[in-house]
Length: 219
Ligand code: ZN
Image (cartoon, rainbow, N blue to C red; front, side):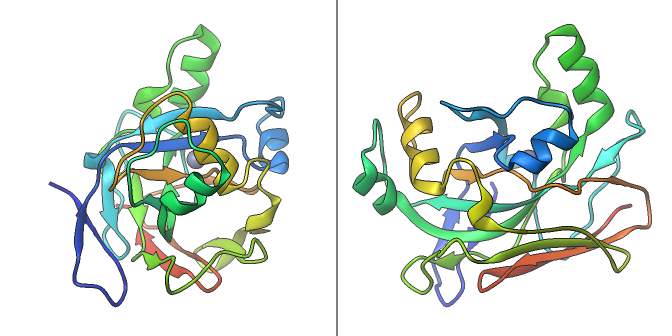
């Protein structure tokens, strides 16, 4: 069973569903050659079994030639919400972390081409890396926080969280209109531009200002 830790708290929370938003930064949608979603975010899932903590290694699957990093703001859901309004969505956020949504881009492209789900591009073991969470009681997101990631010391992704097309409240409202969200569920809120291929031996390090840092090695 996978659990997450919250800074300055002894509570261990079991990870539930892991819901991910695609194309939530216009520049990343553009670099992938995708349209920008206007009314509703692109949503897909990862699993609790994908998740590892910062400091652990990402194991490169041998059935892919194109593993990409995606650095993202991760929301921790702290209570049950369904069809949330603004206030309920805001209150459902228990904390924030920085995460990596590691993606097998070649498998994803092949699936997209065939019109098939891209599940296997996203759910391999170790494909989700999480920093420690910061409770919303301790830090409230402003949207001005910098989000960044470097590979072997070279900056690849560098943006501001507020550039998201759907902010956390809108994201929770949209997702909870289609599925119940519960305590322990995580939402990966999408990645800014600059995703790139990584290989075995590469060292990734990144973070979100005031929220946390993340590092991993590809093995
Ligand atoms: Zn992602």
